[in-house]
Length: 116
Image: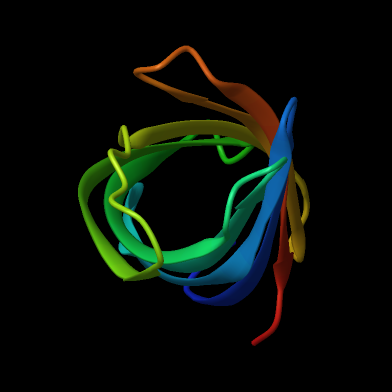
């Protein structure tokens, strides 16, 4: 199964949510791509960011992704953003579900739904 393509990204964490789109490329078991997302935190203005990541597929069942750079595209305030780590299970060829973590100890759950 090849995960290359566009994916809808949805994440819920304890004080907000994020929605966006991932462009993902797979070479053998290696993954790389870009996530463009809007994050909305309780009581804070939303912002838009672009995070580049690399990762791998494990045993054709799981994915591990790690952010390598972030660019805040649009924000009303200064943002300090910790790069994300995602660990997910490939539920079907069109759905990945898992957990996300960052350096600020913020944890969430995410889904990736294949667009194309």
